[in-house]
Image 1 (cartoon, rainbow, N blue to C red):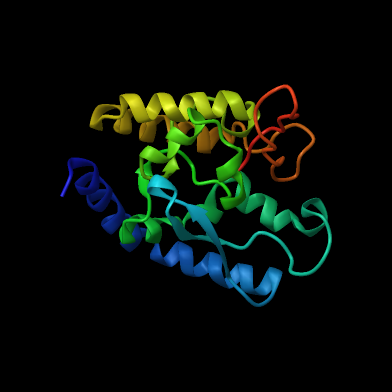
Image 2: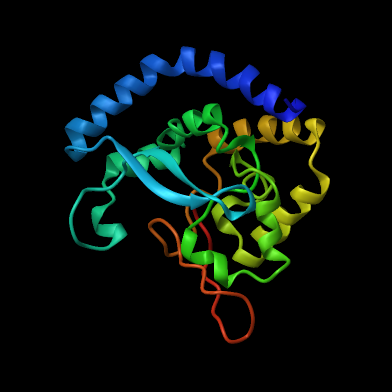
Length: 202
């Protein structure tokens, strides 16, 4: 077992025990505010692009409509406080994710990455990462991927602890929650002059 995995378990196991009442309360509020289906489940690429199912609290109403139309004030609150991401602690416990690493994005983005950008999958995806404490959703896709690859090349226990500490400040300040003009996220269309690169999100 690696030092990184030991750190994940050392923080996640007591964290889940402490946060269990909070997560149960959020689950009840989601059920009452948004209807059936407390958890949002979606396939995301993990280590080496291998798919896994990410878990989050739902933040949108079911049904048709744009993200902006389906995102309720309650859902926006969950996102702005990052409370919607608490179920991802279970992904860390199962070993699909780490506390720190490049954020897992969408499966359909895999063929759109350049070879250099695809290197972000050489590390386990994380709840938080170097890009999240350096702009989060307020930076371009290209900037974000450069930060992700930098993390892959420079990851260490010391860096992970630094990112975790910086994440606390970022969450409390709610910096970079959404990109300009977006309710949630703009789609990554690819890199290069033939593509317009939207701004990212989780």
